[in-house]
Image 1 (cartoon, rainbow, N blue to C red):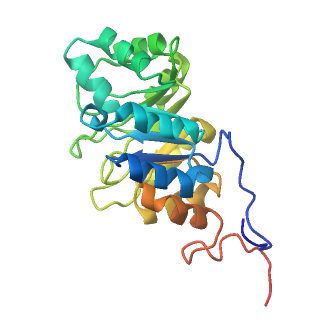
Image 2 (image 1 turned 135 degrees about the horizontal axis):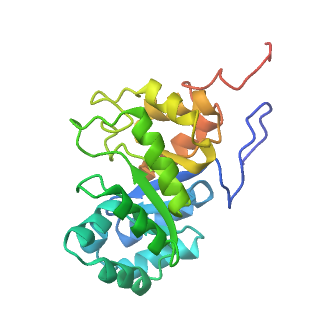
Image 3 (image 1 turned 60 degrees about the horizontal axis):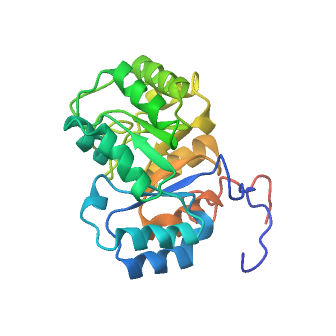
Length: 256
């Protein structure tokens, strides 16, 4: 940090298991990627190349190399996994992971109907090759999954070999964990936390109000995902209580 401020929450340091920030790259150019890692690499733990953007991204290997040189792992969005699965190309997907030297992969079923037992088989198989993040929740706003089902699927997918589970919100933060207004489904989150360890969950929270809500609930070192590259540093200030939204949250008994 550039100077000293007292009474800040203690942030975990990289490589970390909590306080995790997953940034979503929705098509940054190579130059933009270089600029992004120069300014934000200390605050980003992993980057997702959103949905299937990797299919149409120019200089993909070069972009992945920029992230790798900055010590930031990269993985392809779960929608790409689903695009391969629905076409019966699981083995081809595994080869793509090897071709690009990826060490992480996301397994999801937000856009396709996939038997949950089969999904867990995919997780188990991929876990022998890479570190798996599995996403729970639907991208269909009309499909409301009850809390017990979220818990059951998260637990089962962790048991199948997932390193962490991701709570679905899409890049807009208006499905899954959230109502279409962006409001957090608070009861759902609180019920999940009674059964699934918080350090095993990444909460997709692209909107500032959602990030603030989770930080106030779970502290500075909550795992958050789908963060826009331009919002990584603003998020870090929210985590530290250095933005109006959380300014008073970590001050304790300081008196002026």
